[in-house]
Image: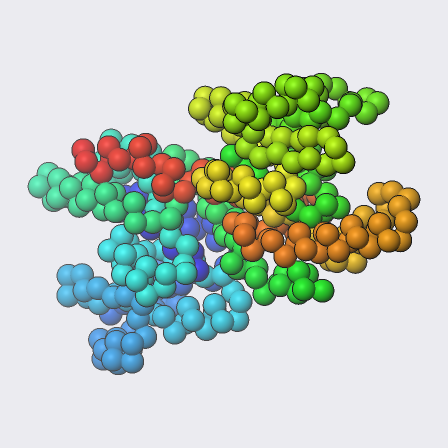
Length: 196
Length: 196
């Protein structure tokens, strides 16, 4: 399981999309949400759109790796779908905010946690500003939040600078390849070489 | 510092040569030896050919990461040259046998240790057989030695199967890229992002 995380405005979505184009065998884990679909959003593509009752049932059944409430809507990462895929040997990709990733780390210490870093703080501020027409106060609050999120990069295993999407995707692909070569992930395969 | 190691007959030399063709900025650490150059071997290319007296001086000055005596000749990995390169920010590649690598691990725990694995034991036996016209007893001894060496793969961080040289080189390049993205190697670079 590979987790792509980072402060808001770092470009996680764009990087994940490109990564999935290049590694189509990966399963992209979609969040479940109780908010209404926006125009163009498709159930099972951007999100699983479920009712609040369904969300609460899944919560009771401990079917979320992590969940959060944002402006009255619930968001959660369904663990049972991820488990199904992992058990059948499929690599899973998770795109998740910093707070969510810190929670997932506790539950899945064997995941690969990659922090996507903006090329500079100025660039991050620009990206946040270009996203919407919010008031200066809201913008400043979002920038402060992003700066606090960046401080969390030390909790991750890898840090990849998103200077260009292609370069960031190449690095993430290298990390996925390297992780597959880790000795502890290949013990079963080569154990018999040593004893023959 | 990247260390490529593995049982004899696994193809370490071929893989390192291809890797250096593709990553010419890497510095390939050459061993020092007291044995005479074979026809075609060049001082400073295959080995540093030094006298036994010189070897002993370097040994006294603790200038070897590891050393060994094989059939009366000394072989050693000069640490002062590696240190110079590493201090000036150059990536160093070391090709080293299993016993040597286990010694280097103790002195340089921050190195990246990659075990090159033969695609199968049969293939390894074939490669050892094809190397020379040794007696069946010597061959069997070499095969037994290689099998014991393979048992050491668990001490390494990564294992790469040398099924084809190109695939093995691609994986090693991915490991080098991934290692550069490790958070602990990027703390200094991004520390200021978090505190601004």
